[in-house]
Image (tube, rainbow, N blue to C red; front, top):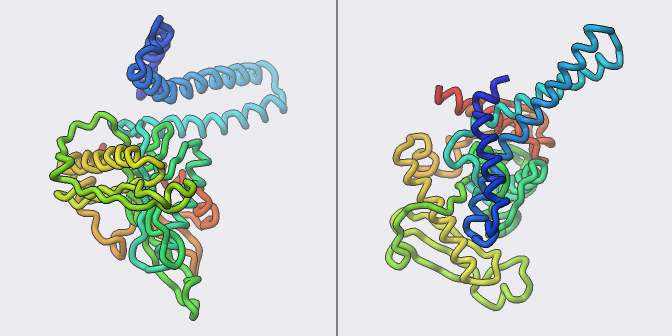
Length: 352
């Protein structure tokens, strides 16, 4: 296993120890900004170091079992060893995937957006199905999720939603889902039960608190306020607390409605807008990101990254990696890690 080299485990371990010493220093907790910075960094370093350390201990235990079997054959010990080796291989594979998440923003939380595309009520229903799929995946992966905005469909489903996803390497993993998702099925909204193709897009931006981008909030951004709908009690229906920001130079639109305070919604929306502008600046130096964010194209034919077939056959196939499965129910219930892993490996192969 090469994780120690790839991760610079010795350097990361030294950094982890230094962070712990700083947190133990007198008056450390008096500086709120410093506390947030250090604890955030500690969490990210531990996410790298702890699995490698634990794996090292388990490998040592497995080696001890091998030595015992060399001295005396024992069926029970051999079965235990074989089970442990299978588990260790899976853990090695998981840790090696972390070595593919080396981008400057991969370790950050992210904004996760779903937008219904071509297909009317079917597309809006599909967007809601995608939202459920990802919420199940977030739950499986231990991510924290906060809904920032949601616009219901006119007949069914949703037109759009924006989520804040928090967790270890949230952006690194979830950026693999950026693009158009295509569904083929028998339409539940068609009286003749005809086959329908629907589209929805996923867009992901890292949460970055220290973005250095100049924005003239008065001249370059139009702000609209409106009454929020959904959870939040009677207050949301009485005041225009929801905020929508439109960046006039790029046409980027963001909105936030989950807070009762218009001031808090405005602050959150500004952070979301800054994250999108940051990615557009990055896109100028990266042709692939430029295609994804600068000229995203219609949410429809010819732009899909993944196809979900529910009729006449059942399969899900990723057009970028070729990864395919017939377990459509499992995928729509959040079992999408293998698709993400395949895309990470594809990206790594392209870099090399």
